[in-house]
Image (cartoon, rainbow over all chains, first blue to last red; front, side, top):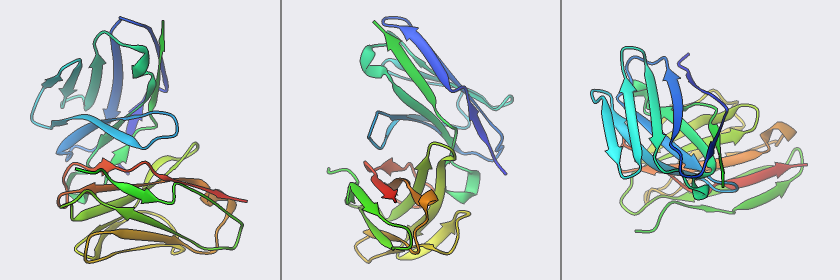
Length: 111
Length: 112
């Protein structure tokens, strides 16, 4: 079946940039998403990118998409301690409609 | 606009019991999806409803069922609970099928 993979952990210093990477296998994906989950909470939609775009910027967030390599990344500029959370990459499974999630990357931000 | 709401937020049940979870989508959203989140399996799709019809179903046993009402609110039911059903159950709504999904805070189910 279709799969989404992410590294499990990332640790950065406050003020640095964070880059979270994701690879996916579904070549029919239309949209790719980044969600954030804080402890005890649901998923917060951070941003998404249409599959025919290479880049999308939204304030401190930059999403890069390499469709040829099926590689997606999320860059968080000037990372703050409040950014500590688990970040999930998801693809929309093409025509299926349900989201296929990676296992999540736990971002730890050290002061 | 109010976000997706889920009730109850926490639930403790024993094996063999059944449970019903409720989800109210964002006003105007017509599609509701359910996901199960566990430490071992991560986030897995359960089912999707649109216009009171199940449009898509994940790979879960028949003990897991759901429905959607005419006001787009949705419920999911798990019968004959097993220890492995302990999880965070997340509901997501979207304006229509295959649109961006917005998640609720989840219902934490513990099966003893």
